[in-house]
Length: 414
Image 1 (tube, rainbow, N blue to C red):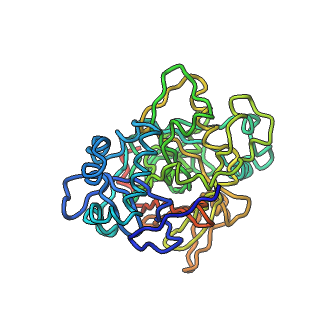
Image 2: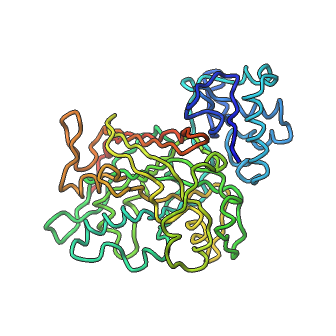
Image 3: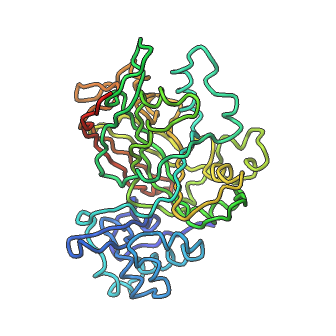
């Protein structure tokens, strides 16, 4: 069935990444009410105050937005998500709603964005075959790049939800232990190998019962939407600590997320078949539907585009990640966030981390301003943006996650 795109009385140009096909949700304050957080919906270059609009036009759902965060709305479930999206589309496209909502639109440049939901648990996967292969070639040049289990299950680690921060929050260079080259004893101090990782995050709405796995086919019943993630990584700390249990302090100091959560409903036109579905998989990972996603990332370092990773090449889909996350009976909670792991494509201009772009510092990345980076330096700013395939060939914007590195605090005694 051909979808007809509705036009908005706001006069948003065709092809705008924040048109009616998008409608992401966030939490904001503005100069008029700086102490009161409200739920907003991005439309064009404005933000609709959904907390106020729901009180006025959809009172049965007003309580879902009263707190100024998405927490209650996430827990309300798929029927509520669909009801509110349909109402928003009507309010912003039908002229007879204009008078009722026009005064609730504020300029996007005048708002301050906050973490949109309370993060419960955080899990980070390792779902890109290209990224995992590159990492294997860097650290195991004489061996098989992928570990024997990699193509059989989505590998991940349990991260730290308390250090997830909204886009724009400065990222302090962490201190920790690492093993200097040519040394047998560890050193301690600021990380010298700070990195970024471009990822896609998935926000859980509806919880599940402890002991009951969630089948991949129920992915859209539990996951509300997506956000952009930068999983900052201290590679020297990470490498020293990772044997035998994996990432810990090299990851937990900060993870940045975009302020807008795009609902899955906005990604229907972006769905593609993930590469793993053409392989021999254990049953709970095999019957997952086409939940690969045609999303194009762009990474800028100090304003310079350094990579454009494609999410469509990701080996494991988010439905498979969710099924694996819960197959042992682990329960979901409202506000759980699980991320894809670094998004990398097959070409060097599609790598999603500086580890790959500069090949662990051996081939420093040249920037257009004449500088080069083996690893991130203090004051460097990383901005990750993305767009997805939308209706009628349009693109749906996912916004941006941005963060600037600030110097480490003076380390204490070794």
